[in-house]
Image (cartoon, rainbow, N blue to C red; front, side):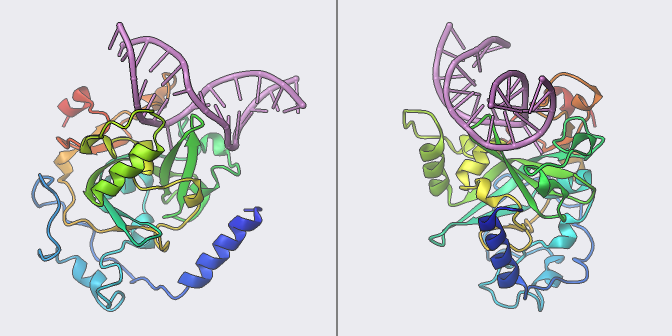
Length: 281
DNA sequence: ATTTGGATTACCT
DNA sequence: GGTAATCCAAATG
């Protein structure tokens, strides 16, 4: 980044968070047995955490005040398709300036594979000031402006220029604040009360609901103080993940049809349901 | 320097 | 199902 303010931000983050350490391994990947995606999904804090969290909670995050199950670089350092699937069921957290914490369970993602992917901003190896985040280390955010007025939130994965787009969340915590943010930020004039389903069911909707804008570009999801990812109580079954064509990438080329969008089958929080794709198993 | 189009949303019929 | 809104930034000259 050649922008002095961005450089300062970057430096501040680096210094402030340089004391963080992460375990050698997170342990085995999330178990894929378990139950189908939960109906209410949200378990009370008192509820038992999965055993895989034991390791993560150990010495690294001893303070209960600290992020109890924050996912680190090891989680993000996997190929885009694997990461896109692994995101499902994890909880995205946004801490606002006043300390309010907003939480949403990720239910829909898209993988963008890098230079060979004709639908990716990094197609053909294009690297520009805008998409730099795609080429940075796994876990780096890539936030860009679309149609001059909306934001999209991506997370860099393993693989040059590869990333995952976050497309929909199930609101879990801070729902009224999300409603307020959406009502305030969206372009519509009238202030009809938005339904819960309308809060985070789209890549730009979730950015509005969580107050995520361009200032989050190139931040580190593994270390930032205002946004992070927590291990959800349980991920969906493999069979509960639908693989469908990506949304809004035009009508040309083989890449348009590839099943690189993933969402939780039957979730009412998904932005676009693909009935045809759901028939395949 | 100018042009072009977009990883969307909201509101219309 | 269709399309206006709205402007950044990549691509082109």
